[in-house]
Length: 216
Figure 1: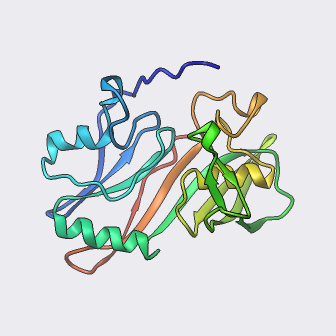
Figure 2: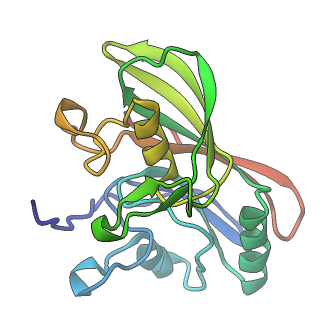
Figure 3: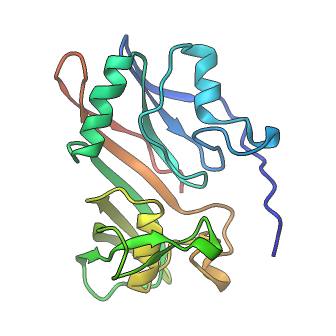
């Protein structure tokens, strides 16, 4: 088994929005959202954000290998407000993924409960006995050669949910070294991007939508 070496990208951060209460950025693939274990994994998105926004506070995360829109709070009140929006599913997240193969249907929903695969952490697995409910709506955008570009809308927010659900559908996300195999896993990055996040501004109550262009 190959030993993972953390080599985060050094590109400048892309700030999509900033005000007195929140800051939204486009996380590059390969950068941790928060520090990992050990000093060699200290470099992370929230740490880099803190240099420009000293009061930055975590609200949610994106996987190391996933790119795209992520929001941080700049006040404790905003952090609580946004956290409740995520917990109560009042935010809307849309992802774009390149998957292996062509789904037979044009759209559908994967409804499979998930739990951590303890002997193989950080992998998750489907478990109908003890898994937590997890639903993902999906739609094929277009076929691209032997693969398909899909829009994924998570109804729930379980760890690795989109990755496990696409594998269960029979169409793993390209570049997924945990859940894909063979040629599907052999890509320079995980082909999963958080394209859009919709939320309510914690101070003004305004409905807001943030988008980051798909880099693949």
